[in-house]
Image (cartoon, rainbow, N blue to C red; front, side):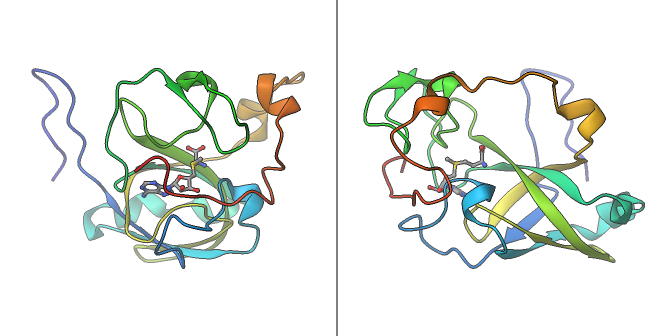
Length: 167
Ligand SMILES: C[S@@+](CC[C@H](N)C(=O)[O-])C[C@H]1O[C@@H](n2cnc3c(N)ncnc32)[C@H](O)[C@@H]1O
């Protein structure tokens, strides 16, 4: 049943769970570009299964989820995986944040009942799912893009692997 968010603050309930081959933070990819080909299964709670209708026509979708292995944290700087210096939290994708919400663009392989099979997943097995949205180039890809300090980062995001610094 959907949560009642009408009063005092916001409370989300997971709508499903993301299964992946990654059962440890050590050595896993840090972004979908580093997880190319990795298969995952998104299992939606039955009550939301009808919401997957029409998604099969899209090649990619966003998964929004809760970083369940990381405590929420109000610190405003972090040392990200890609650089050996502190950065402002909101210029990073670090999992330890005030609201531990992650997002990944993944490739859709199939939709079957309440199950969505995807590729290129960069999340831990058992990650609670908050939402799914289609990736739409006409909505989501701006014509000119700069990626700040990440454009000049020390490390290649495709090759860089995770550790447990954000536990
Ligand atoms: C840098 S974050 C990026 C995730 C997502 N693509 C984003 O931009 O929000 C990816 C890292 O978060 C960590 N991670 C993945 N799933 C997690 C989970 N469920 N709980 C805590 N940490 C997680 C792992 O260290 C992984 O390498």
